[in-house]
Length: 493
Image (cartoon, rainbow, N blue to C red):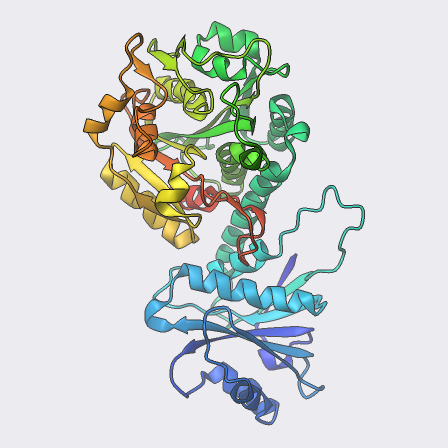
């Protein structure tokens, strides 16, 4: 999509459609609405009365202007009550308006630059809603849909250009990075196994200010990442350890790591999943995709933080060399793990990935993101991620960035008493708890065993990483959840 800034009146915009938003604020309309309504001879206000428009979030009403103004159509979208206004409402409203316009084959749209004291970077959030809502994954479609919104005109005052350009750039980077993550997750497991994921990273980061290191099975074994290798043992397609390093041109103020679970397809291994739970397991690398998507955006944002993106990519499928339930494996940090369930595999890959991240010099913060536990969906549903930490202040900053991005996280406690559930009779630790209760927390406690000397946050995104239905901003399929949180958080450091 192209963007064009114009300081002219929106009434004179020669476009297919105009988007206007309205809050539930009594019977008085804002000035910009009245300006257009007057040019239309009162037809816009009458249209809203006729359909009993209540300005509920994402409620959209359209009106053909019949040539009375330059634009062919006006799209009025509700934003709900101003007291309840947040980034979710803003992005969802503009997503709904954009979808409505696209359904009517609109090629270009205009909107007014506006801000709201209640929502930081209101305009950026609105643009992200539009861009993310128009995402399509049609790689395998033979009949691809060509129609779509091509140009967005932004009408503004003469003193607003710099603010608009900054927020437009942030929105574009956030949407592009999120859509990259979506593309990776939406690809079938046969078309994005570890070697191909590594090849995709080579293409993405070639010629850019990144250092890319990729290890094959031989090097992974030399590094003594045997917990990770135990997951890959059944697959004929070898694992790939991917380390993407971004280093700013000027001296970095701090160094942090993003660690993503990269199980490109998860059958459960010998602890085989039921067929109905296996169909969508290409999305088990959504954490890795979020890391790769966020890393790709850092160069465009020119952040002055050194960031390491780390992915231990593997398949988890049964085979002749598969890890057996009851086997004992050793992680990179020397800790022994009794593997009682091969479907609790993500924590085994992350054990070595986290150990490696914490061993890097000058590392101050590590955030891991993973579709780790099915029980997380039971705990917080499919619209929130769960978060656990050893540093409350760090997590609160991260959650605030998530709220601004339209990605919410609910904190769960790391209760020490639950560590007893992981005690093994024959090893240091086992990879599942004794009971089915608190398994999301126990997953976090397991990962904490491999975190040393750094501030750390664990994000479990098993619910919001993949959507079974269209939710406007989050289209059906992969959502790219986590990317926008990371970009805002790193930019704020």
